[in-house]
Image (cartoon, rainbow, N blue to C red; front, top):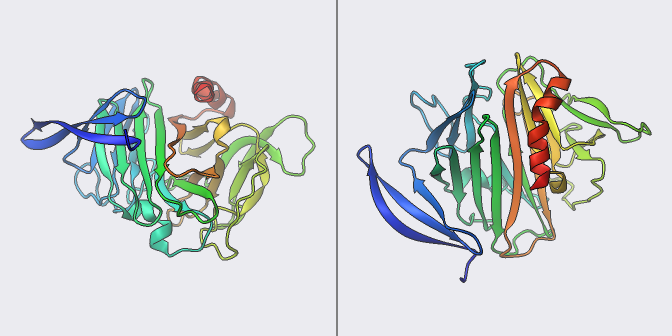
Length: 333
């Protein structure tokens, strides 16, 4: 098989009067993956107490997504039986694939290429939707971004990507994901960690606060000593502007009303937490994260996995208990 992924047309079916392509994706050394290409740019998933709307990067304005702007793919709407309000800014999205970069100064359209390049939306099964983006015009990065609702309503997001050319000048791939939160009472995030100059033997709860966009915006893991070359005038100010805190466990949460959003990661991915008090406009913070692929190889397939839980908030201790199973499952992958 010459390429990592080949595509074969399996059949054409008709659903609700609309023709949908029924396809099979053949992955090298893996079983075939069946999917259906949707006739709308979004899909609604429901499981447990959670409802999500997954959207590609096309604009939508209907009774499901009113006034949703183009360019903002991912989870356009996240609701819970205990909170009917969309957690995310309706114009934008959460778990949104925002940037591809290599630390070099580029025009905005290149740094925001995931917004611009065409993106297919495919249904894998009743609870799983995939966003596929062919090799992007500048970076030549191909990606498969899958959103799956687990049995308890937790979102598992899996990114597979393949760089097809040596376009990343600093020999690493930088990927950035944003979640734009709609008018929460608190703009801050919470994680277990310590100050970079601390000698405390045990981690404590840190309240991540950033007073302005791009100021002390990114929190690294305790053992993340990596240095990624970047231009002095690199315009994405959130990415390399570090705080004075380090996290000891790869997860964090934020609070909106009586609900909490918890973002959980695999320890080995060395994700970097990022935040902005105004990423989605005044009073709309961005709770973000970054993933890097150092010393990448052309044609190699790379995978990143995380989970997001949306649940009623009682206390930090309750969040620790509620997420324990998922955090353990992630680190076993």
